[in-house]
Image 1 (cartoon, rainbow, N blue to C red):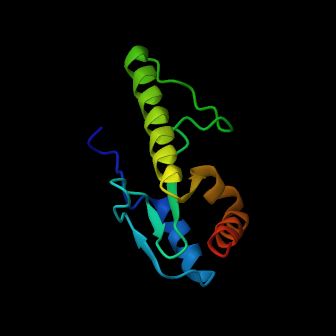
Image 2 (cartoon, rainbow, N blue to C red):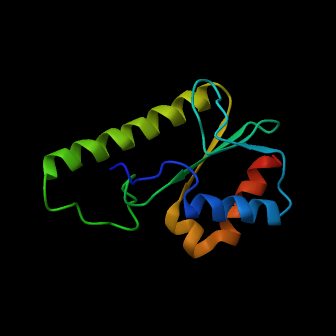
Length: 124
């Protein structure tokens, strides 16, 4: 799993490029907030974005099959990923942050709608 990149993935880069193109500036990348590192942080508006890969975070819409070998390992790994996602979200929300989870397929299939939703949250 050394080849699995955690930051700067192509969906993440595409999202940041779209944010810049939409005029949304003033964000920080991988900035620590409340001991957690969201992928993109709008500090003034207290909005934290997490970019989730559909396979690694088990997107309900995409339904990737489980790997055939070592299923117990993969089930436990995916369970821990989802649990960690919930804990990070709850922690930031308790601290007064708005949290946006952007799925890989949303960047691929509906990037303009995703950026519009982020813009709406920033300007609340």
